[in-house]
Image (cartoon, rainbow, N blue to C red; front, side):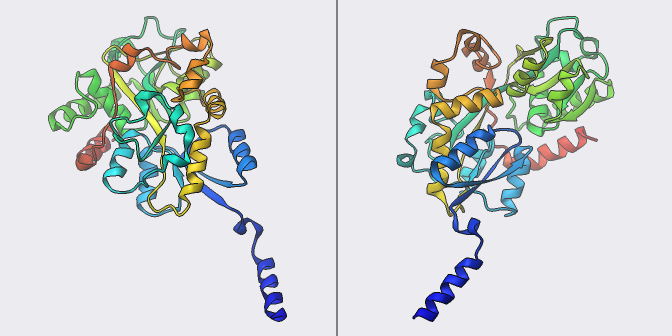
Length: 343
């Protein structure tokens, strides 16, 4: 028996310490959490966080579908959540393990992309609009026509998002259509509008994360941008302003979910619950610059934060916006149109 025990001790000594520790693997957008929050979670719980990043929902979904990694917590947007629920790709959450989820604002507890609230917990939310440089634009920006009409925009003037749903969606809104249309004629019309925008020389580039710094340094008068990135840019350059155009736009939610194949659901739920704690949600809001879904944080905002329409949109702004919905059944048509837009 002593020999057997000695062999076991020797074998255990050969196993790396990290392999014995509890850990979860988190798959999140780039620059979308305060690193101190991760360290605090690890210190308080003893659970190690292994972290991976993605740039777009489509990239994240493709990696999950291909089985390219084992993830325990993911941060998809609303329409991808809707799609993954249909495909049985998400685990049902045990809310008994997550008491802080009760801190969510009421309108986000059972959103229409997850009507039972069993598969996702809102993390951040915001809008899509136009960030513009008041020193370089000689008029008030109020409409999507400001980025599509060459007379109003000028040339080499707009950074567009390298995102099929966002860029195609705002073209649809500019034409008076829903961002979720499946009507091929409407989508073709939106495609032609985006192609004309390029042919007129308006587009300076299709980018994602790089746009923030380029707008801060004054490299273009306008950019299609998510509200949090816009707010970050505005904090760094006072000449920048943000608007949700009068025709309406997208209101989006990025939420926390657990993939159905995760083997560490309880640990993952601990992490999600931790991020819903008001003090932690406040830290992330201040770091990321997006709107928080946690009611207690909203209640404690100072007057400057409350009056900031980029951080805290009014109800009339939200009312003229719409969620993206899953269009996977027509994704082939969307992809074809997007490829033609991008040349």
